[in-house]
Image (cartoon, rainbow, N blue to C red; front, side, top):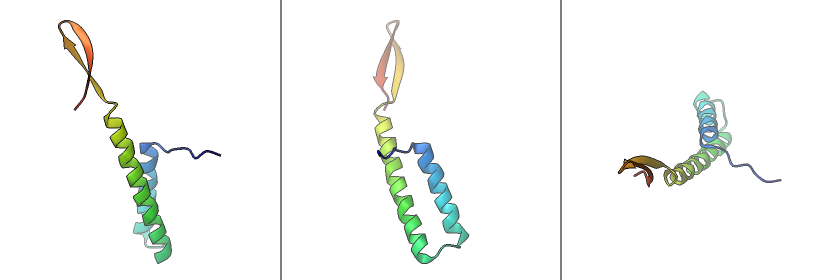
Length: 73
């Protein structure tokens, strides 16, 4: 079975859940470390998603009465 890639929004929601668990101070040290490691992986995955999205963002410009697509920087 293939692993489904989570969206940026799903990653952020999961990171928020992990933060709530960590802030509750109800986890053991081992569980806290495990949750922290999951959060770091989600953050790295989210950064990759943002970087890949940057290359897809385009802006529409009107030049000489024509609409043209140009990479947004």
